[in-house]
Length: 628
Image (cartoon, rainbow, N blue to C red; front, side):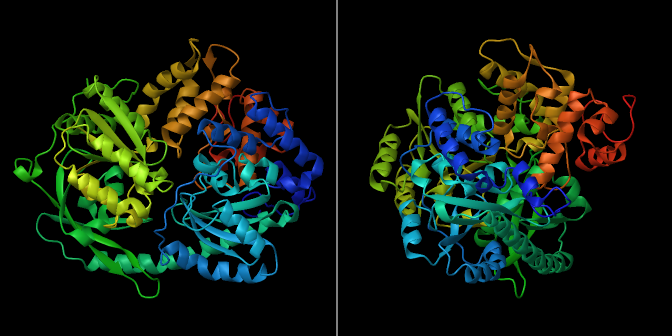
């Protein structure tokens, strides 16, 4: 089996498999192109879209694009010129892109490399006319092609779906993109499985080829192979530095990199998963700025300092060795908020995990004291919803104003004037700077000056940021204006919060109906990994509401992807295969024999697939059951 839905010919034909996985729109012919164009018009008019006319990934992307309010006639996307040409991804991708660019030199096709946030890092195109058109639609280095900004497109849709995506001209949500077709494949960290970038091919709609899918998948696989080779060098250098590091009395040592964390037994007992993430995010800043005091997930305070680890031949740092000193609880240096009282509740939010209670206690204390706060967290964790709820709880009579830093590049001067007006309200207005990590370089210095000039302003000022990695730790970002910081833990690290969130989200979308989750459905939701965090949970419940047949949401109403817990990233075909097995099991009440017969496979194959995909549906969790 190949990568992301391209499979070897087993008698049925690889083309058949690609069509089943939704990876080959071009094979549908001109009639299908006309059909997708008409279907898009119906969708934009709020009319039902005929079944089988539009591929499911495209229709799902259209729905997301509409929810994000993407403009169908204009391209308005943030610009971030701060590119790191020496990043690990760039170093690994360079020879692969050079080779592919040479192969495509005489073709009207562009080769694009992006980071995990859909920001374009490199573009190679030899055709002058295509290059000019790509500039006109901002498909150029520094611009973001995330779905939330430009709608359905190969790059943003591949990031959202976590798998290869191809989008034919008329399938794009934006009218401006319909002259081109594109295919993009995720590049995953070979040790963690996390998406760290994309490789994309974009061509004129009329010259697009199904081979674009195979090319980007092959290129992504080659880049991942080079990343693995480079990772071996990094890990060896990091291990040497960790083993030879000096440990003083009362001091612990850990070694961190993007995809690696080393700790001795004592440090392992002290640090939880959220602390691992905190140290990864802060290591680069600690290495530049000296020691800093941090608060761990359990409330204890530590003093940390870091030094970079060099590895010959890889370019850049291999990682960081961090020395940690636990501060005594009675020390003034260790002063921090007391354990969070369980009765602290925020309007419109829910949670009961220790991590959630600690987060709520800390951020409400910062708001009450008027301490400017940086709120970090992955996409979909609900950073803005959290700040809005804290604002309503602490300042019910005040106004809250949100300024999106991602929009600052369109008219920098007017955007900065709007921020200045909010800062001039003398604390009567809470100011939120959204997408703080996407602030264009053209606005950094001016915003930094505004914030420093208003440092004595009473009231609450908040910046919302993605998890701060090395690229976002630089002095160019005015994060130093926010002395207090909290990180919203991802939902996968606080499964206890799923159960209280479910009724809250159901009530939001059930149109007044009294809908509840059955026990098996709630267990499936609690056990899911939730890479998309609360946003994905909300989307899954909306899916279930649309598919339910009564007042209860059952397991069979949930998206099939939630009913398996595979330990490796699934290719597009594997996801399709898994979904078929899940549906067959649900249709036959968990009876593996009947499900296998319906699918035309043996019981032994069914057991192997259930075990391999870690499918859990009632009694269907590998091996024979009473249903057999």
